[in-house]
Length: 497
Image (cartoon, helix red, strand yellow):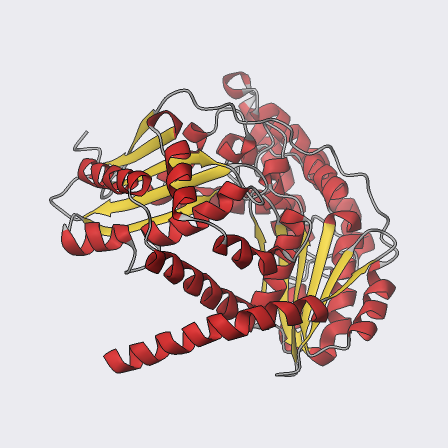
C-alpha cells in the first residue's frame, strides 16, 4: 500500500508540473464563447471521449437577492420550475388555467385571514381551506407529474437536478449528444412559458423540508443561528430556504415577480461540454433561446456588513452531541487576500495531512473531526469557518482553545516551502480531477463566469497562489484572525445547559 501511495503521489506531481500549464493554455483556446443578442452567455467545450453532453444553465440570482420578509423566494421558485409549462406537465392547459386562477383567489384570502393571528375568523379559515382543497383535488386530474424528468429519463438523461444557493440558481442535466436539441426545446420552454402549478402544496413541501433540515436537525440549526449572528446587515445572514414565517405566507405574486426580474437571458450563463460541434450548438441555442427578451435586472445588493467591533458568541440548545463553529469575516474573490485564504484552508483543515487534523484528531485525540472552509457565498465578502466535533469526554472549549493555538502559530511561524509546494500540488491535482468530467467542467465554467464575470479565473488561480509568500500568510492571519472579528457558535445539550 505504501508503494502504491508513493506511485500515486508521483503521478499527481507529474500531472501538476507538466499537465496543468498545458491544460490551462489549451482550455483558453478550446472554450468557445458566444453571446446572444439578448445577452445570454454561452460557454462551449468540445470533447469526444464519449457520446454524451453535460449542460448547466446558471442564473446569477440566489437568496441574497431576496427582499426582507420574502426569504425563501429563490428556493421556492426553483421548486416551481420543475412543475412544467403551458405545454409540459398538463393534460389541458386551457381547462387548467381557470382552476389555477381560482386557487390563487382563495389562497390570497386564506393567507390574509391567517395573518391576523388570534383575531382571525376561524370559521372563515376552515371554509377557505375546504374550498381550496376541493379545487386542488379537481386540478390534480389535469396535471402530469414530473413530465420533465420522465422525458429526460426516456431519452437517456442522467443527473437531472437543480440547486439554489445564496449566489446562484442552476439547472443541470447530462444526456446523449444526439439529444441536445431536445434539451434546448425543453429548457427554453421552461424559461419562456413556466406555469407555477401546485404552488400552495409545494409551499407546504418546502416548510416540511425546512423542519427536517433546520428546525429538527442539530447541524442545520447551528449553521443557521451562526450565520444569523455573524451578519447583522448583509442578507448572507438569511437562510436560503427562508424563515418559516416567510415561507408560510410567501405570495405567488412575489415568486412570479422574482422570476420575471432575474430569470432573464442577460442574467444567465449556459455551459455545454462534451461530444458537440460548437457551431451547430450555437445555432440550436440561437433558435430556441434567442427570442427570449432581455430584462433590466434589479439593482444588486449594496448593503455592506459593518466591520465587527467585538466577538459574538451564541449557544444553540439541542438534544444532540456538542460541536462548535468559529467564523472570521474575510474578503471574497478576486481580492488578493482570498487567494491567501485558499492556502490557509489547505494548511489548516484540508484532509488527514492538515495541521488541525494531525494535532487535534491524531495527536491530542480531542476531536472526532475538524474542518475549515469559506461560506456562505462568494459574490460578497464571506466567512472563513472552523468546525469541530469533540471526542468524549473532551469539550468544545478544548477544541476552541486548540483552534486558537494553531492560529497563533500561523501568525508567528512562517509556513515552510514544503507546505507551500504541497498546497500548489494539491490545488493543481484537484483542478485536474474537477475539470476531468464533462459535468465538473460545465459546472465550473458557468459558476466562475457568473461569480467573477470571466470563467478564466480557474486558469489564473494557480498562478496567483504561486506568488504568495510565507510573509503574506502571516500578515493575512494577523489581519483577520482576531477576537473582535470572530463569531463563535456552540451546540450544547439541553440537559447539560
